[in-house]
Length: 211
Image 1 (cartoon, one colour):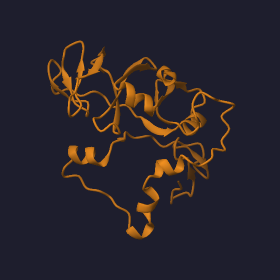
Image 2: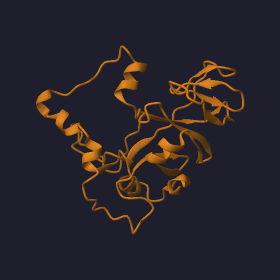
Image 3: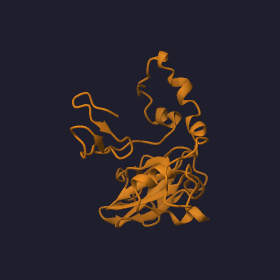
Image 4: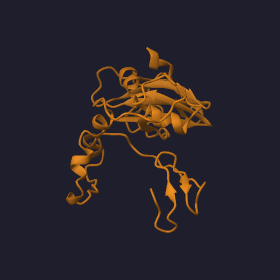
């Protein structure tokens, strides 16, 4: 990316300026959702959509984009890394100075994923559509909570073992002791393994990746 004011170039993944007057500066990441449009529309029925001009060809470019780019060769060197295939889709999370990659296939199979990263307990969950995902700190007022998915719940409902409160996919408690409270969202980036590894050379990989 480039900014109009200084012409500096910014790295898309890290938000770091790599060339120009602002070289070395960093943009602050903001929380975003990795969800399907159907789920987003359900949660925000009055939401508006920003659509580029049809003349840009955005539809043909974006259709099946992930499947299409997955066939491209990877030229980046991963220092003989063989932990995961270069184009394995992962969800990358950084907390407390620690970084970890969670293979998307593992999350979809084991959701909800319960882990601790940088001394912060977290949970990663996939919605009922098996595509949308979100990550949260799994604690309230400093009290860690252990979550499990309510069997056969449609839409997805999570229950904490400590109080039996029921939580929805937005991280809000619908019933129980914590009714009305919300879990803090965690910044999670859906990426390819080779890309995440380049910008996070000391990253860990979730143990379930080998299962």
